[in-house]
Image (cartoon, rainbow, N blue to C red):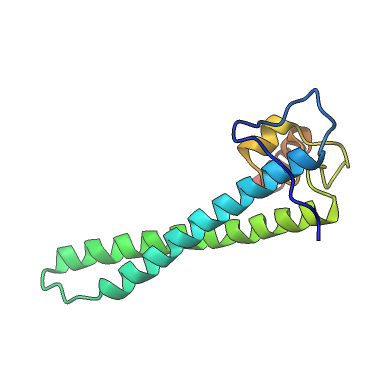
Length: 140
């Protein structure tokens, strides 16, 4: 078991420190765990809301509106479920020492990009190439 890394509350990863040092890894690990906990809490409240919300609405328009709202809520939760899987993958990469490096090029991903999107697996340049290829294939 690893010793816990001290991390000041106001800590932000900086470009002038060694890339993916223990403090940076701990910062991103905590950030990912917090995001995951928030998503799981929202998921629980959605399930409770869907279970409590089964009521008979006599007006057809109101019933249709409620069903549309439920369908939208379920789509949002499905996206969040996929995000939880990405968070789990990022946490695994932290444990394996692969976090913060582009899976395509092996180059470090910028700290700003990781801070904004901690589950990312591609550098900005690799992501742009990926999106250009995707667009070309979609236009066929």
